[in-house]
Length: 370
Image (cartoon, rainbow, N blue to C red):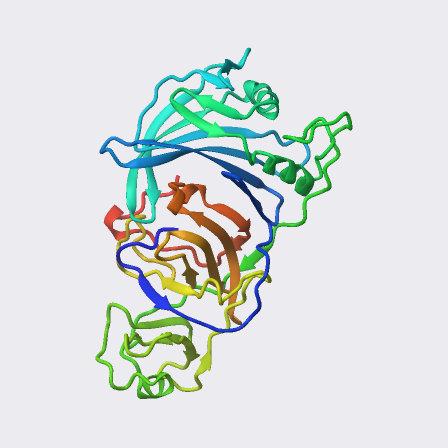
């Protein structure tokens, strides 16, 4: 999720809720792992920091991914921010891993919270993954060329085995045994049916007096770049004026002229602690091109993201007609140099959209259907 540039920031500080352990996440040593509601799991091992091309210190990371279904096989990647490798020997505790095929390296630009940066991505050949995991289970440090990854904490992979029901089986990542693979069936993927996309034509973005009075922002100047007036359905508008003197900011649903105002209810994950991570919400800006190339951003979306440290939870909601529905829950790890594309999913869902996004007018007329 790209929230830079022209997207609107809303800071909501809501007190309430007790401290809770973060579900679906395990952190040990320099390793962190997470599994989502579909039992797809990811583990990251952070390397010692190395010098980037401008002399800054960056940490590469090892990424291990395995889906939750029967027969799924793990994938191992090495990500090097701000550097380049085209070949690298793989060893554990200084001893080459016998039989492993060369790592395939590609260069590309990856997304970070503060912008894009050059990355090098190495992928371990699928036929070599089991050999590498076996060597890692009996070692203390994994070396990939000049990069070194401590295996202190790699037992988080055993936690993934338990989460997926693989512990003690031949398909386990870490807790390998003689038992035949027998993974429980996956739960059904949650599906969100979106309300039809509402036409924004004719909506007056200026805050009605009732909204200003309800939010206590009548003395604040209009701020068209940050005020939110978003039609979600005929007669249903999302209202939120921006005023630095009146924070935390409030969101209301109401009529076209601010009548019948009611607070927005955003469902949260059961373990989400608002005292630890107050919601900092963003909403795409319709009609404005963004870094992601979206010309007409969806007015039915709200999201929250970590701020300041660039590490923490990121949530997304979609408008389903009767209210906002939780669509995604991710753990952002930008402060460790982990790309946005590699955020750790905790909850995922699919969307059924009766009104897909209109064609970007910059692309010209759509080609005729054959």
